[in-house]
Amino acid sequence: MKEDPPMVAQPQLPGTQPSLDLKAEEPRLDASGACVHCDGFGVSYGSFLALREVNLAIPPGQITAFMGPSGCGKSTLLRSINRMNDTVPSARFHGRMHLNGDPIYAPGVNVMRLRKRVGMVFQKPNPFPASIYENVAWGPRVHRLYRGDDLRDHVESCLRRAGLWDEVKDKLRLNAMSLSGGQQQRLCLARALAVEPEVLLMDEPCSALDPIATFHVEELMRHLVPDLTIIIVTHNLQQASRVSQQTAFFWIDESRTGHLVESGPTEQIFQTPRDERTERYIAGRMG
Amino acid sequence: MYSETFRRLVNALALGLCTLTCLLAVVPLLALLFQVIHLGGAQLDWAFFTQMPKPFGEEGGGLVNAILGSLMLILLASAIGVPAAVIAGTYLARSVGSRGAFWVRYAADVLSGTPSIVVGVVVYELVVVPMQGFSAFSGGIALALIMLPTVVRTTEEMIRMVPHTLYEAALALGAPEYRATWSVLLKGARTGIITGVMLAAARIAGETAPLLFTAFNNQYWSTKLTQPIASLPVAIYNYAISPFEEWHHKAWAGSFVLVMLVLGLSIVTRLVTRGKYEIIQ
Image (tube, rainbow over all chains, first blue to last red):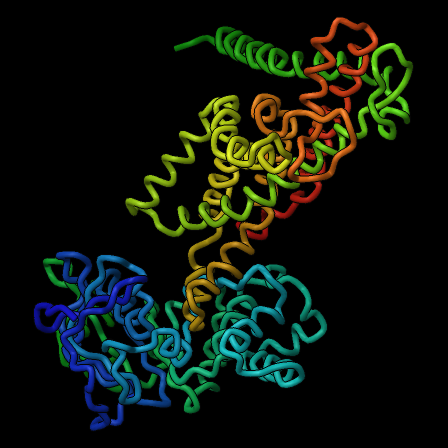
């Protein structure tokens, strides 16, 4: 493997070996007990630095909110946790990130297995153009988790956890596109839960939903912890204060590079922020 | 400031021009259909679909071997061309901006502009000569080459229409790329690809030139891939240039059947894809 500049990792593209600064035999990092641990983690697209050195420990079994103005890198960081940014050819990664002690960016990491451990719900509901049942059963089939009756039971339990079972139990064969926007988003949640992830990433999951559907999704999130660790990106300050226990606040500097300003318990960030920018953002005076 | 009357006048003029150009486009089509139905439909009888051609001088007879031959050639061309085209189209849709994609797209464009007679000559040199004889197989290859660019470009366009977030959703579940491509991209683009295949099939149904040097023609009943095979366009061509009135009638009847085949394919395509597009939007 060729030598790369230090602290630079490349996404694994088809046909190329990832070139990483990390040692193949990197020890498991368990000191903080964090679920997701970022250690000087950054992302650049070509020569543009999108996110600068994030040091962050996301505790397990809680809801952590990523907050900040547009372009501050919070979505970039979120999409780095399940390596969705790998599909951007110019993306390069710096520093380290661990999931429950296992390195996320290291040579030989099986990205598919990683993504099975890190589920994702997207901004706009994006169910597959297939039946409701097929949407939930798709992931378990790919990973051969369940078959036959077990699969059916599993689909039911996922739909229950997503609070959708009572609404769809009689129309599982119906096309998912026939559901309302809020139902579609809960179906996407059920689909993500179906591969039994350890962490659930939610990228502004309610921005396309009305207040009632938003309330539904927030209720569900509260029920999913502490079995699951949830990380949510949100523009909505009220939502962050309503659902999250931890908050990470991001900001963008003059060169349009995003960075982490401060993080901590949501209560503390909202009531006694350490940084002036956080305080002004929360007061609604900027951003 | 234009006056109200002037504005109305311009509007009426533009509308009139639009109507005129529409008529210009539709009238030749209707005239063609009328002519073919008028001259061809009248000559049709049950025997045309069930009997073999008869030598000149004998009454009756049909073109059952040519009808069967045409259907076989279309199926053969699809069997050879469609898988390759769909794979190439998928590659194009997935590798935006890569060098390889540029050349594949360029090749498809050049191929779609290649005169079909040239395709026939090339296949003659590459397949007919080594196989030492005209064959249905070589005809299928020639027609497949003509189908190829249409299906490649349709597949690419249709896959591009599938929202990228669906593909991302599949990857985020931990699916390998081939799985996401197969069951999200290709499944989502399925109806569009089928449309493209049907239209390409309708197009090759009427191709004559590439068959002259490949499938050639056959007076007799043949279903062998290694033997020359009759086809409707070539049969029409042969009957139409003959000096006999009786054979001209057969040519018209053949044209009628061919037009109906193409029309039928288009109608089936419409029915298959009706109301299916909103799913992938």
